Length: 169
Ligand SMILES: [Zn+2]
Image (cartoon, rainbow, N blue to C red; front, side):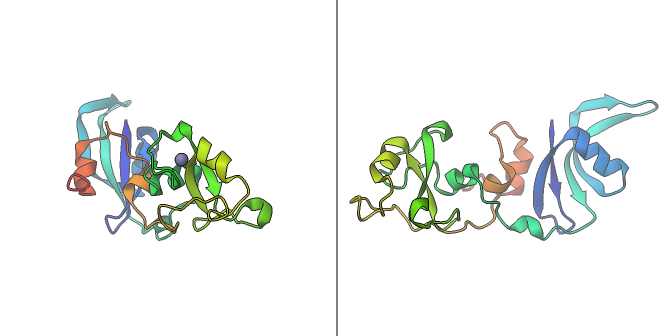
């Protein structure tokens, strides 16, 4: 069971375990927005419903920056190799440095893209044009999105998806 945490402005900031959600609640840092009706836990003197969505009393500004990570690069690129345009699972994808690290290329949103192993091997320590390869699109830092930042799973509560209006996406 997981709980979606919003900040005071109803901006989704993270997903936590129900245990962490209870701590936020009991230490007076958050209030319940909705609960899981069907899930209850028994305390010493009360029975609690598990929170499905919590709202923090504070505001979290820093969460609007997307964290640079392997997983998030794959999300940004829609699990698509940026050279051959085919889709892969995360385990089949690698990270390619457009300007190779051996030539001073940085580990950054603007220089790292998703690539399948054959394309990565083919590109090696060359620039795309030197390897006669073309990038699908220019790599940029992605805007904050729940898919990238919160790692939503397909079996998460439908209500969360409604919250992000992902259904229409
Ligand atoms: Zn490829």
